[in-house]
Image 1: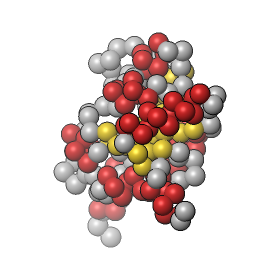
Image 2: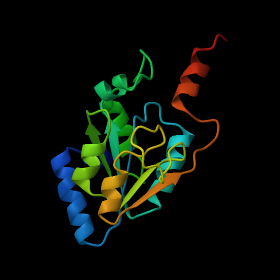
Image 3: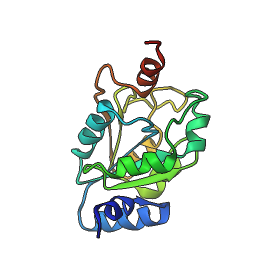
Image 4: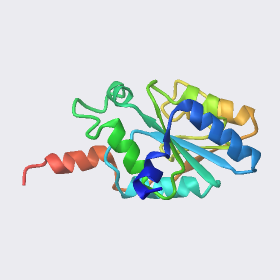
Amino acid sequence: MSRLTYQVNKIVDLDEAKRLVAMWQMKSEKVVFTNGCFDILHRGHVTYLALAASEGTKLVVGLNSDASVKRQGKGEDRPVNSEESRALVLAALAVVDLVVLFNENTPENLIEELNPDVLAKGADYDPEETDPSSRKYIVGSDAVRSRGGKVIAIPLVDGFSTTALIAKMNRPA
């Protein structure tokens, strides 16, 4: 199998993700789930994903579809990269075991279907927040906890964000 084929095979639909996660868990693998847009991959993303992966033995990334990103209100020019491009770049990372696209506004259904052992989000979220209307609430945290899973916040790397990177690129020289 070529390296490119190996990467492409990490990008799966929900049914295949459910099958693989269930198989891994039967083999006592600890599955970590995180999600995001990952529009322009940068050091902050790579560090975040590596730290999330270190919380288990398998890392599954829920990736917002293009339509989902547009509904996030991140700007008219977002996403910069297509969902296919973003998925392939994520799949190229050694710490990522699976990439699953989702079209909903949140990954709540994906989390409920996959039943991860650990749910990870950035430290701009609060694992202890229980109010779903709060911006710090981690979607899917109730479902993960109800099945005995863990919800964690991963420290962010200061000075790295896609929005800031785009603003920097658009500044006049």
